[in-house]
Amino acid sequence: MSTTVTRTRRHELDHLRVLATLGVILLHVAAIVVVAFKDTRPDLLSQFNLGNLANTGGRFAVNCFFMTSGALLLDPVRRFVLRPQFLRVALPTLTWIVVYTLLNIALNDSGRPGVRGALKDPLSLEPTELVRALLAGPAVYHLWFVYVLLGIYLMVPLLRALTDRPEPERQRLLLWFLTLWLVAGLLPRWGAWLLGERFPVLYAMPLEALPVGYVGLFVLGFAISHYRDRLRVPSLGWAALAAAGFVWTFTDVWWAARDGESRVFAAYDNLLPPVLMLSIGVFGFFATRAWGPGPVWPLVLRTSELSFRIYLVHIAVLHTLRVTTDLGPLLSERPLVGIPAMFTAVVVISWVVSWLLDLVRPLRRWV
Image 1 (tube, rainbow, N blue to C red):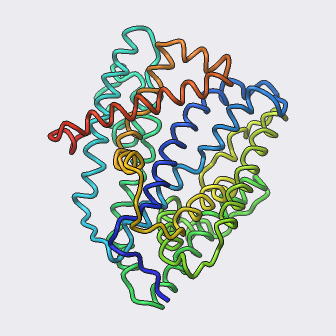
Image 2: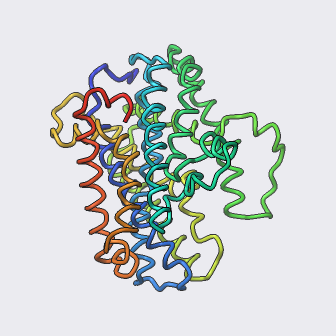
Image 3: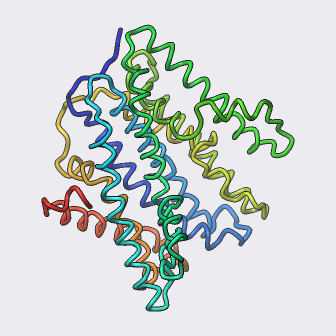
């Protein structure tokens, strides 16, 4: 039976988008702790692992953003027009690049470091370097996600030609696409992670022409969502997959830090098996649930609508709190208290700023 979704709002994906928004804030807060204590050869019960635990808990977020976008934008019953969809992401991003540039100038003038990224110290850049920083980026470190998303948007009209096909041709084409992604994009990456230089990359140049990177996650999100009835995976199965990925990510990062290895952060890679298992498990748990057009809490719906703006804003809030308030030292010195305190502050302030900006109708298109 075909499982094409209806035109109604997917409230289960609203819940997932809110959870992913909280997750990405959590991982950026916790990453500060992980970096601060990565060279301490930590025991299981350690400040490093407090940060590692929280960081791992948020690692599903970015992959779920990609998969959620794919589930919605590749749905053949939903209308997609490239130009407005592209501008809906590109224009606010450009606005916030300007905001981050001005913020970094102000921080640098006060003797504080700017937000990490190509525009960390914008006044030190020559005009050609400034253009390169904007185009090659990321201008600010968390905006890499937006750069990738915009690139995928340019491919959506081609991908829609695949998902618009009738069954069973659509299913065969999706399976073929995801197989090519696995062979060309994932297996070489996994082999290099597990075996290092011992892993031979055969026929590397032909593989580079095949689907690689996050476009595969985009298509995978559509496939899981569209064929959710055929998959017949119970909620417990998705939860178990996510739990296995969580444990694997946490332990691999901890063991690398404990043994003093240089690859401490390798298992945090979004396209390696640990985080893929975690994020696919979380996405499948939500995307295959039959919540459909049912009611959703107003706060959840509003936060889902504000999620992209919150993503753009939250690093400015986090960095400013870190370098100008006592929350910064608290986070680095007492993570058991600092992580929840900083996380709560960033969530609340980012939500309020995003909500206030949304109230100004002329600004909505630009921020």
